[in-house]
Each structure stands twice: as C-alpha cells, then as structure tokens.
Length: 227
Ligand SMILES: CC(C)(COP(=O)(O)OP(=O)(O)OC[C@H]1O[C@@H](n2cnc3c(N)ncnc32)[C@H](O)[C@@H]1OP(=O)(O)O)[C@@H](O)C(=O)NCCC(=O)NCCS
Image (cartoon, rainbow, N blue to C red):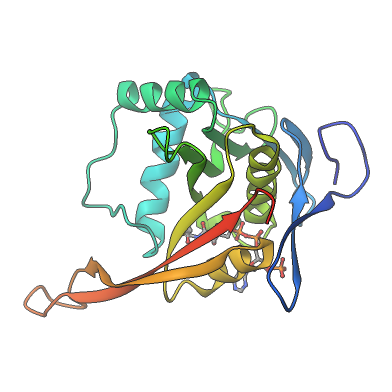
C-alpha cells in the first residue's frame, strides 16, 4: 500500500493517545492517497468536492438500507443534490471540517464516474468555544466491508485532524451493539465517554403491531492535543 499516492511503503502508524494498557495508533494516510485495498483492488482516497454531491447521495441511500447502525434510516428524506452540494462546499470551506471519500480510481460507472465505496466527515463546532471539537461520522458500503477501507478512512481523517490548527478533539457516537465499529474506534484511541440510554428508537421487529425497540448509543472521544 502506498501513502500519499507516491511511496510504495506500507502506511505508517501515528501515536494517538495513551489509553493506559495499550498505546493506540492509527494509519498515517496523506490525502490524496492511492494504493490497493486488502484484497488487492485499486483504491483512492481523496477530499470530496461539490461535484461529488450526486454520488455521495447514492452512497448514503445505499448504506441507510444496508445497515441498522446509522441514525439516518431509509424512512428519512435524503438531501437533494443542491443541499448535498452546499454541505460539501461547507466541509471544504470550514477550517476544522473535512469530507473524504474512497473510490476505485478511474471511474467504474457507465457514465465514467466512480461509485463511492466509503465516506468520512469531520464537522467542527460552530462557536468559538467548540470549534476545537469535531464530530466524526463514517460509513462503508456493505459489499466493501473488511477490505481495510474503514481503517484507511479513519487514518486519513485523524492524520488530517492531528495536523489541523484548530482541532483538539474528535468525538463520535456508535450503536452499543456495533462491535466491529467500536473495536475500530478503540484501536485508534477513542475512549467511551458516556452512554445515551435508549437514545435510538427502532421499528418493531416483524409486524407493525409490535412495540418499538430502544437501543443505547455510546459516545466516544479522542483528545488530539497535548495531554
Ligand atoms: C464500521 C465500518 C466503517 C468499518 O469499515 P470496514 O471498511 O469494514 O473496516 P475495515 O475493513 O478497515 O476493518 C476494520 C476492522 O474491523 C474488522 N472487521 C471488518 N468487518 C468485520 C466483520 N464483518 N466481522 C468482524 N470483523 C470485521 C476488520 O478485520 C478490521 O480489524 P483488523 O484491523 O484487526 O483486521 C463499516 O463496517 C460500516 O460502515 N458499517 C456500517 C455503518 C457503520 O457502522 N458506521 C459507523 C457508525 S458509528
């Protein structure tokens, strides 16, 4: 795998924070990045641009039906292309915010564009007192799970965040039972900061006459500044 699109060296790892028992680390990934996924297929990670709005919405619409672990569900409206364009412009313009995507280089759709395989966003706080804190959100298409794309996206996001002049903290929320995601977050240094009990309401299993289920949401945080 190459880092920064040039070197054939394997991705380096960066110290994240000392969690006590183990020293957590993430992959150091410079954007734009070109290499291969764990199964050897070509892969590119880069910052999203407003022109990625339509492909971004297609990705969102796929992952909201493929997985139960998103706060947005298939019943919720997706942004329009124009709204998504504006959102991507904002990620680009705000100093503590970032939107990254993973795709096959060179395009793999009939229109020559490339399907988005995974995304990661960092959105910094909107006030002077919270602009050092970014909220992270990510999702990889189910067909591409387990190929190392999530770890690469996380590495690229945290490599960027660590160098950013404003950001000092990243937080995220994850379903209590989403063990794969929680392990990934713990490995790079996120620690559990709280549990929002029964925060997520899920539709009744089976027929609609059943009762809703409520799931806990775990809030995790990672400090990027000096201890
Ligand atoms: C969580 C998620 C982002 C991980 O992305 P991914 O591309 O599959 O992640 P990776 O391939 O980099 O794998 C990360 C680790 O999880 C492990 N893993 C991945 N899929 C797994 C599975 N189905 N079962 C067990 N372990 C799995 C990998 O082996 C890897 O561990 P390792 O580095 O020790 O080998 C992805 O599963 C996803 O988008 N899920 C649905 C949406 C979601 O949960 N988003 C997060 C909301 S907070």
